[in-house]
Amino acid sequence: MFTGLIEELGRVQSLTKQDRAAQITVFAPQTAGCVHPGDSVAIDGVCLTVTTAESGQFTADIMPQTLTVSTLGGLSAGAVINVERAVTPTTHLGGHLVQGHVDAVGLLLARRAGSQCEVLRFSLPPELATYVVPQGSIAVDGVSLTVVSVGVRWFEVSLIPTTLSCSGLGTKAPGSKVNLEADVFSKYLYRHLKYYLDHNPLLPSSIPRSV
Image (cartoon, rainbow, N blue to C red; front, side, top):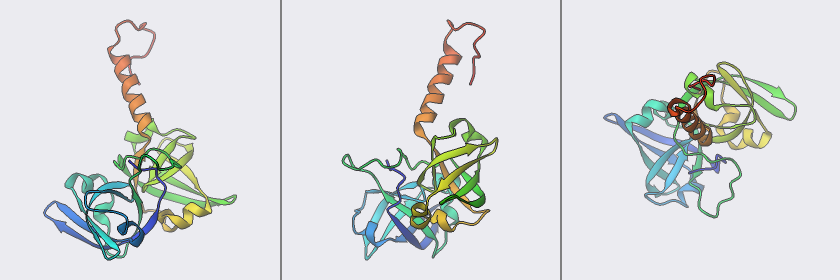
């Protein structure tokens, strides 16, 4: 579990494909000095397990499913990535609960200057539209952000200068792919509500049976 507050900007040293899986090595001195094999680390919002950590860098394996649903398979040496260690019971929860389980890949559609911030618009895949609401939370490349507006196939967030400088989102150009993770509470609420409406025979017929 993570909070969506990026601790360090790492740099990909190598991404080696192994059959359908891959192994990634990241130069991130702050993180590498604090993690051990078996620890969880989020790379651009994807939860991975550390296999080795030494000399200012750490290595992790990437499974086939992760390569399919995230942007990690497209990384190359030199790429700048967001890094966050897993939370502990005493960690301050400054963002929101982020699992590191990517739901879909979106595109940065546009960015424009705002008042003391920058507004970024991302594509909104249909499978996530139900869970994204104004003032709700969403993780973009592992960064905990508040949704400011939502359209049929897009959503917008406002990035303050600190977020722009401390995460990879500050330098992404329109057309860039990003990892999206919807708020887990929204997903649970939708699932429970849908099950209740679909399976409760006592509901009046006037109430829609699906959401």
